[in-house]
Image (cartoon, rainbow, N blue to C red; front, side):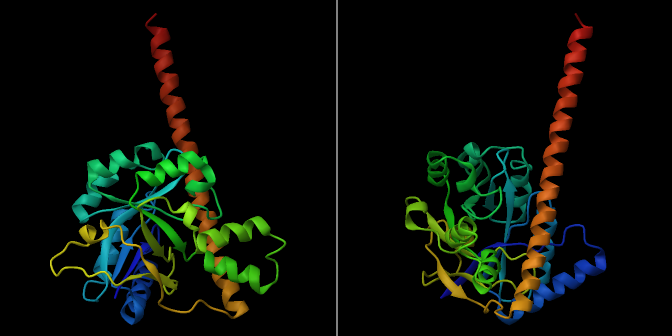
Length: 295
């Protein structure tokens, strides 16, 4: 059996050097104790994904866990798409094709063909504003799946939210929220598209949050590159690495930490999008002024 986590964040961006080293040591300790065979470094495109991959690869260099270079990029529509690459050089080149808010989900197939990337549609109906199924029409969502390699059928970031709602008996009070969490933890067959691989991922942003990852009994040839193996579009099944916390106080801490991270990322995205619009408006104004002056 092989285990894969195709959605993982080192989450070290803008950390002081000492805090960054501590975070990486904790990640290394977790991977040494119970890490999967393969983990994809999929840091957000606005949080230095190249550095995240390099540091994660260094931290796990002598462990059994191999690190796949990748990025979770956000499109002009505000939709997250994961791109995985064969090597660091591929990641370096690929990042130029997916600048934050600088590309469209309509171009996913073209970008993948140009960069050689493998593509994953993550958490299609999760809470928040970056999930493809929440933003696109049904037709648009299915079109996106048709040009992608994998769809994420389980995203572990929903586990903490789900257990909190269940534990406090509030699931029925937040019906729509609970429904989105259910879709995120077990994507229905009707939403998985045709012929795609199935990713089972942790979406961990903190050490020790790789609760459930993907597993397969497919055999990888000794010299087979990992992306060639993944291009078979494996339908991964869930595999528990560690049990999610059940104690209410511990779970509350996990939830608060997750919410803090989500809010920070949302603020950064909004800032980047706003500044991008401001720059575009400035360029347009300069061009119009230039055109007026030349008349």
